[in-house]
Image (tube, rainbow, N blue to C red):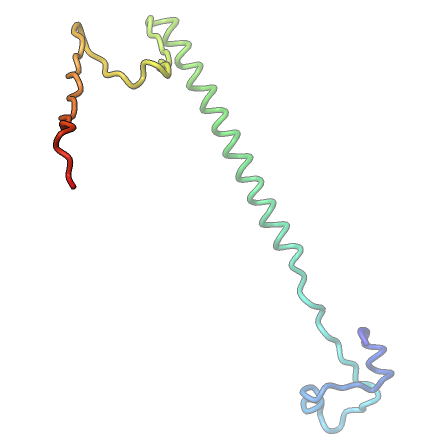
Length: 122
């Protein structure tokens, strides 16, 4: 029984509502209207729309900032002679220390003392 007409035809009145009906009311004309269950589809779609919109706005802002920074560097390098370069070290040379004008000499590894074969423990 979902519609009020079906409730009216069946004569169904819930107990908690039956007590609220005035004593002189005609029970044949009482119709109970129930509220539909809450749908979560709207709030979920709203949350997804807000999240997607925020991500798109942040990506556009990052892209615009990158373009502005690149144009500023281009203008400064053309007018002032300023240059900007990224130096990426190679895999071979990245572990060595950088020194100016002198080489770093590492000490030779020490050898371990050798026991003679005549001194064995029994």
